[in-house]
Image (tube, rainbow over all chains, first blue to last red; front, side, top):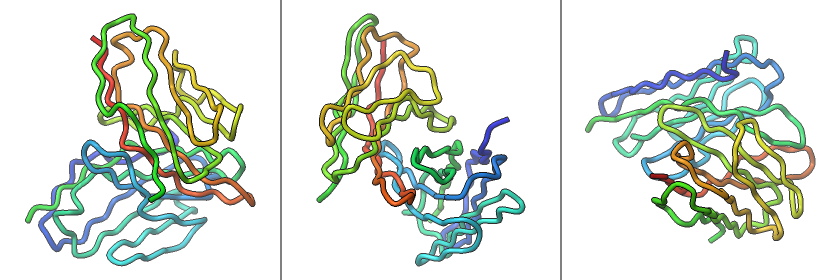
Length: 112
Length: 115
């Protein structure tokens, strides 16, 4: 079983829709949770970063962590065609190694 | 502007050739990483470094080697390339200190094809 599971999609939505992206994980020791966005032919870029449980909001993006369910989500409000990309969740156990475990990524297409 | 640079962006080489993928960062980050990414698959860590003269193998078995002689430079070398090495290679760096974990900054990647 993979440590981090993520639906690969693809997910296609109309412009303006609310998008929900999710990951589940099996390692209860994970403390740091991140979402990366990767455009085609580019490296991933950090989008959201949360520690432990709770919500974090940044503009149109909201990250949620539910450690009791081992489930994290990224919500995108008022989605735009420029949001079309692959979204990867990543997580890490606290410590000096800072080794991130990534999901496979969800391909999102926002149709104009 | 601080960034992380990978060269070349694309490389097609013949089997048996030796190649070095370059990675440099201007942010002064202590930690650097090499990941392998295939379509529909998660990123797999193949090498990482905590600082100068520190290198470790990652979770994915790899026939490549790395070196960290300078903080800003973390090249990856394949002594004898094979078609199974065909993949996208991503370099990343992050800060370290105070027990805090920071997000990675990634380069744009090197798309390697071995024929």
